[in-house]
Image 1 (cartoon, rainbow, N blue to C red):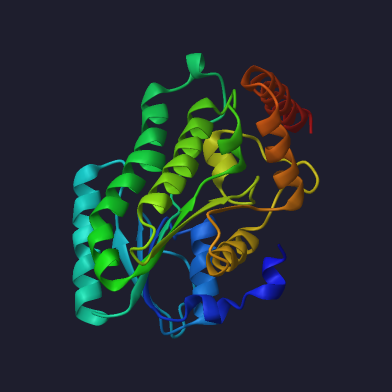
Image 2: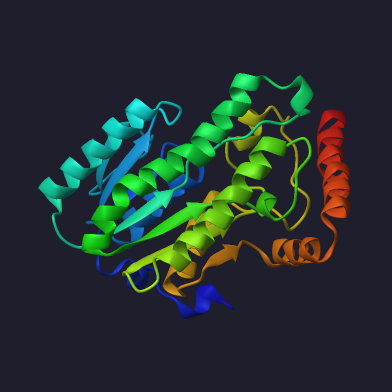
Length: 277
């Protein structure tokens, strides 16, 4: 489906008065903010992240709520602040929730920092579930949509990215299940599965800078646009890029043990090539 040709970004956001975004300080989250400013500058954006986005706001209505997603108390305080802002500034209209925040680590689990691995579970899974659960009553009353940022890592086990890949598999399958449960309640759910994206993910994961295999990567701006057009198309999930769609489809046809071994070879090879660069 050629989403670019069929769906207008302005039409996608029509009826939405507010966006609640996690992780908008950089990467894909920041691209969502820039895209909102371009398409519908009067929409209210509540950004939950540790740092405020470094962006020229112009006329954009952006409210930054500091939040550490590794701490449940801060998530609760952050959601309470979001609800207060929504009720005060835009008490009516649909709400778009974008669960974008997440990170990963590279290396063998045996040698990993366990606290960092547990942090991946907290940020990529628990925070998303808690924020969604606490905001769903508002979305049910006002109508709205949920976009959860997963990954192409969700389609097969990912040795050397074991916890990260498993967390994104949770995001994908949880999103699809939630979408089915919410049918008929006026709430859409979309899972977005980008391939390697040019954000700060690799640096935080401990991967040296290097090139992404040809045709598999995207810019954060591309992912933001693809996400909104897929939402307009009422897709359940979208894999960014036709090459990534082919790889995900291929992985689904093979035994899990085969795809795991293949992933180990591919991920290890990317790391080795970067080290030699």
